[in-house]
Amino acid sequence: MPSLSDDELKKEVMGLHQSVYEKYNYEMKYLRPPKGEYSERTLSLCEDLGYKTVMWSFAYVDWDEKKQPSESDAMDKIISNLHNGEIMLLHATSKTNADIMDKMIKKVKEEGYEFRSLEEFVQ
Image 1 (cartoon, rainbow, N blue to C red):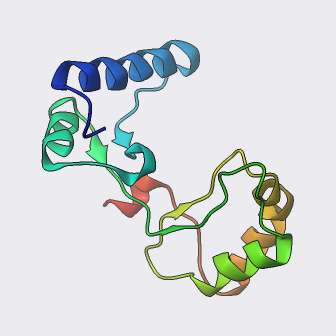
Image 2 (image 1 turned 90 degrees about the vertical axis):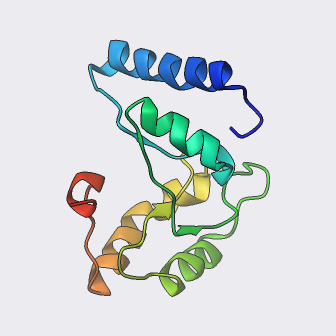
C-alpha cells in the first residue's frame, strides 16, 4: 500500500468496498493492509475513507500453498503463541489451516480463550 499513489489507494480500497457491497450487501469498515505494509499516509487515507485499520498480532508462514506446514507444526505454532487480545491471521489458501481448524478452535477454547468479533473487541 505505501507504494500506491493517493488516487490508486482510494481506487483500490473503494473498488473492493463496492464489490463486497454489491455481492454481499455488507459495508466494510475494517482494513488489514496487505502484507502488513503501511505508512502514516496510508493509515490516514484509509481513515479518511471511513476505515479502521486493524493489524494482526499473530501470523505464521501459511500462505505458500507449496510449502504448507505439517498439521502438528501448525498446531504447535498457533497454540504456543496464544495471548489475550490476539488477532490471529490465518490464510484461507492454507490446506493445513483448513484441516486443523476444528481441532484448533476446540484447543483454543480448552485453553480458556474465546473468539469474538472485531465489533466486540474494539469496544
